[in-house]
Image (cartoon, rainbow over all chains, first blue to last red; front, side, top):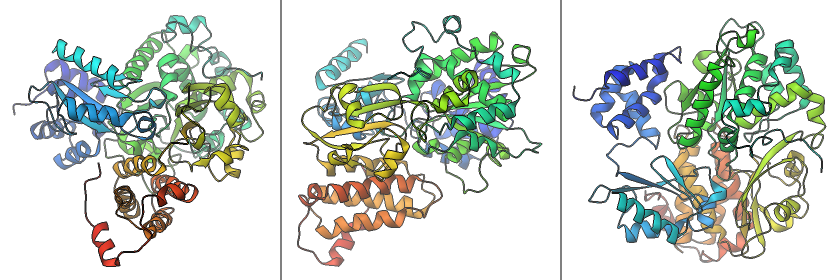
Length: 160
Length: 434
């Protein structure tokens, strides 16, 4: 099997496993480790995780399907997650969406050909007072408008 | 207005997330008294405080704790609900970010009271920053002996672990949360048995919100009666109220319960932005919306909200000005609930997406007045027919939006009816949700 955690990551996993009385409870943390290590959760990864955690493949599959943050295909280097729920909608989330769709030519679920950006519509990020909000990878970008967002995208493009 | 800051007192202190700094400002000061009390006495004080769950359901915390079977031989678990995903709600994250040691102190107090030796903090996956801060704070607290074996020589052992969610609103429901920690889809369980009897790993479990737990140290230090004196008779203590949407100064403030909502909007949110107030969602998107007229006589208390047919919920308000298109606004919510329905109960799985498809059709100008009534009918058929409250959480805003702002909806629909067969054909079309 090509997909496998390094010794170091395995150690990290075993430390996490010690937090729970039942190894099956490590499925979510194991998937987080896998996503961190491999960038996304492939079928092969799911098979590996099923074996590591000791649950059937179907359990891993349904969990990956259920939780929206597990990426089943390789996201862009910068994964744009736009909140579209009420508070963000009220103060201009649609304009940000239009910007992404038109200026980056990126529809929800897609990745730019250069692999730099991917786009996912998400539900409430819990940052309603600083709406509109886009989470890029782990970080929140708050109080956005098209100009500010344009600036952020330019900086990310420059960083490459 | 004279009241103590319970949750936000250290928010403005630089680097307060570091143990060293927090200790200089009184962190963990309740533990000395805590360990001089019996666990039952702590439960008694929490009962006397009349503190209600801050996560939205407003269930009395002390009563919940007392549900744990006295003679249980199983381990007891404490789960901290930091899944904060209710639209309009964004204050737990600041407790974790600015005062993680207050939360840890609250966990120690609460775990001691319910005789739990393992606690899990369930934090939503998106809160990466808060997760890192909390993890660091836990490590510092562990090294300093505030968690681990024999805490401060008290003989009390406690381990605290963080479990990250991965993007599912339903994991904020306590049994969904438990399922998720167990490594499964966050599909809520049928109750009873209630978690206090049979929860995590089949053992007695208490699930409490971040802000509920973070208020326990104050109750331990000052007593339940002192806490009960803050706010109103039924709504005791303080809460962090948040406001978003069309206001000039969106944000959050810790206040005792009881302020008039319009005073809150003027004094703290600095007024409605872009026009007059049209509608207000008082405590997260699941709570029925209120008209500007209803807000004239509305207070930030559980009882006043109940009198107006709504709920205080999480205390996260969403304000909409007079130019808001209530149909479009509601569509963001039906899409939210249809996306977030866990899919196990038919009335919820089908109902939420049916409502969303109807809203989409109404917005496209393809519906008639009949469909407005259908929105209500579907909502009525969803509520109370499912395992958890998500169906009701969708039905309540739909019903209140359509009833209270019907004129907005009527602008989109044709008064004439089209053949029923045609309607049915459109309704069963499985169009993509987004």
